Structures are given as structure tokens and as C-alpha cells.
Length: 250
Length: 314
Image (cartoon, rainbow over all chains, first blue to last red; front, side):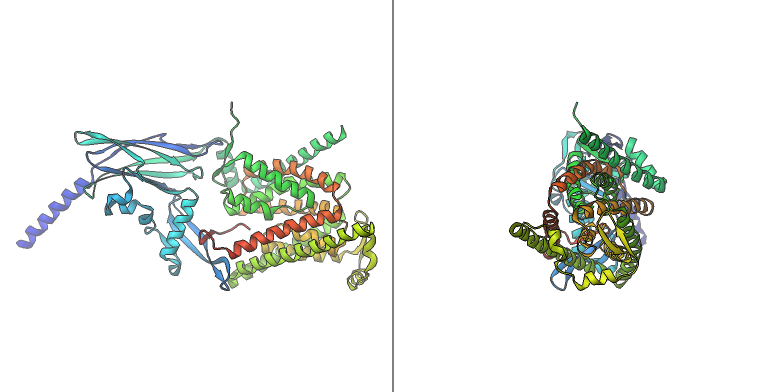
């Protein structure tokens, strides 16, 4: 009987916890999708939403996950730095941008999975012997140097509490090296060290105009693309050569 | 009103500063026009530094070299500096050697220490070629100052074993443009050897081919430059089409901006080259090769910022 009561109590507590965690954050992004045209050079994604009153907000933009095959540098003959072993980082996000209303370190353990340090523990590294904390850290360092992984402290601006809610907004600068694909913008409200509410929005980045035409051709009609690239290069070289010839003739 | 400074490259997956890419193309094209080298050994690392993925940088560079070498070959052809017969023979040798080299690199990769061998070969090759050319040209320049005799006149002084050996080979042929008589085997075999090395090192091979033409085929420097460009044109056409089909790594927009810059540079380079003496050309190329060698050596000795690298590229 006691066991049954304890189980019922546990279930009750669990359902209460789940309903609290299921609190929804409303999210709106401007623009709703990213159009990568010929003149694309990064874009600022404006985010607005509402979170529970008194909470801090963490925003994470990530996506276009893929396997990354790399070489590990090491010292050959104890002297020369060279690419030695091969290793793969599996299903790593192409882009990982995170920001919050406070420095992430000040938001406690609940915010840790969102930090770059927390994120680097989530992916798989092959072969197993290459799966070292150093390699994981180096990978995140490389991506950060390329502007693809970034942790911005205090990038989220909170509004004042209005009843049970408060508004928030942020401007997230998307990198110029953005691959087409589907990205997820997630918002997490943290209160008293716990996740109080969550929300997610889908942001699609797609090629338009000339980049779209070229990519379709390069991947869909590779042989024709290669031949055209060669022919146009030859014609451009000849054209410039002839321009110089006519100049020389005068 | 404003001219867009950035363009998004769909294959590279990044946006680039058009002026910077154009300037880079112009500078490398200038060197290509002066010295008859493709410039891949300079261009690809610089593109990687600008944020282009290594595989895309190498393949797109080959695409732009097609344009630059067309322009350079045309300029040198008008100046009478292209030995087509020699170029075609070297090319045939190069294609055979390149195919062999690809197999060699597969075996080396299977053995597991390919990168080590490639890097060591690269540095030694650059050091040897650059050092030898530098010293030889320096001596020739000094001699010119003291005796006022041309370097061509001083050459027949040493009828070496090598000269007797190449004269003794079968199938001798006249190469009128170069003003030499050689066995057909010479360009075929040497072209093949350069092809093997180029394939192993992942470069076009211009900076090895030029010294081979000068010192082993004994062609005049100005004809060497034009003929080298003619041969590079075909090598890079092959690489561009193969990379497009197999790896989808040719970014045509990037190549086009580079090649407009480099074709202009190559034209100016050919005119500068014409004004320079053969030995001056050699000593400048030797200096360039040595600078690249020192840069590579530094890259091998200095602690890298990040201990990971992307696969692919030169």
C-alpha cells in the first residue's frame, strides 16, 4: 500500500514538473527565412518573444548538422608539425550561435548544455581513440575562429514583467558562411536555476537567384558545369588577350 | 549607388570581398605572366586564408588558371615564345606521369605517412630548385657584368657527360622555336617525372617544369615561360572538369573574379618579362620559390594555432 502511495505521489510530481517544463515561449523572427542571394554577406536575425515573468532567457541558433572529416596535427620526428591521423566529428552543427540575457556562466547548471563548452560534449568523435577533450576543444576553437560557433554574453534584452510574462528581444548576426538548410532557433527561460519554459522556431536558409542556379548546375549537371566553367575561362582569357592586342596595335 | 563589395559564392558557401579576390588574382597573374608558373602554390593557401574551404580553393584555382594561362599563352605566342611541339610532348609525358602519380599517392596514403612524405618532398624540392636556380643565375649575372658576354655564349664551354648523353639518345628531333635538337624521349620522360611529382604534391607543377625546361632541356628562358603556360592550360582544363564531376568543388564565380584579375596580371606580366634578361627572370623566380619554401618550413616548425585541419586542398 505504501509503495502504491509513493508511486502515485511520484507520478503526480512528475506530471507537475512536465507541465511546468512544457511552458511555451512565443517566438518570432524577422526575417522568417534567410534568402542567400548573390549579395548575401551575413544577416541580422531579429528575435522577439515572451517568457515567464522573472526568468532569464537563453537563445540558441543551430543547424545544418553534418559529419566533419578532419586531420589531426601532431609532431613528426618530434620536430615538424604535420597532419597525422584522420578523425571525424559526427553530426556536428554547421552553425552554433548562443546568447542570453546574462553571461551563461552566471545562469547555473541549467544553462551549461547551451554553452560552447557544454555543446562540445554532445557530438560523437570517431575513431574512439581520437575522442579526447583536447580534440573536442580544438574543433570548437576552429569553428569559433571561422565565425560559425559563437557565444555572446548578454545579447538578449529583457523587458519589464507584465503580469505573468515579460518580453524579450535579441539581434543575432548570422555568419556570411551560412550553408543552405534548416536551422532551429530555440529559446529557453530559466528561473531559480530550472527550465521554466521553452520555445522553438524554424528558420530556413535557401539559395535564390544566381547562387541557386549555379549550385543546381554544379550538383545536378556536373559534367556540363565543368565544361562550361572551362570554356568561359578560356573565352575570358582570350577576350582579355585580344583587348590587349588591339591596344598594342594602336 | 554603391558598387557591391561582397559576393556570395554558392559552392564555397561563403561571401567574399570582390576587390580582395580581384587583387589576389591580379598579383598572382602578374607572377604567372612573368615566370610561366600557374601560381597555384601561392594562390591556394591565400584563398584558404580568406575563408575558402581548401578543396574548393584548389579546384577553383585550377579553373582560373585555365583563363590566365590562355591569356598568358596568347601573349607569349604573339611574342614568338611558345614551342608547341615541345609543349605537346611534355604534356603527353605529364598526363602519363600524373596518372602514375595518383596511383603512387594512393599507395602512400594506404601506408599511412603520405602527408609527411608530401611535405618533405615539397620543402626539399622547393629548396633544391630555388637554391640551384638562384646560385646559377647569380653567377651568370656576375659573369655578364665582367665579360659583357652573353650567357648563351658561355654555355658551350662545358660539353658535359649530360650533353653527350642527350645527344646520343635515339629519335632526335628539331625544336625550331627553342633552337635545340633533342630526342623525343627527353620531353616525354621529363614531362612524366614532373607529372608524377605534381600529382604527389597536388600542384600544377609549373615551378618544377620551368627549371626542368631551362636546365635539363636547355631551352631559352623566354620560350620556357610561354611553353610552360601552354602546357599548364591543358593540365588545368583536365583538373577543372574532373573536380567538377567528381567532387563538385569548382566555384565558378570565385574562379571568374580571380581570372579577370589574373588574366590582366598575366598580360602585364608577359610585357614585364620581355623587358627582363633571362638571368634576371631566373633569379626572381628562384627568390619567389625560396620565399615559398621558407614559408612552408615555418609552417612545419611553428606551433599551429589549431591542432586540426580540414582534409583536401594542397
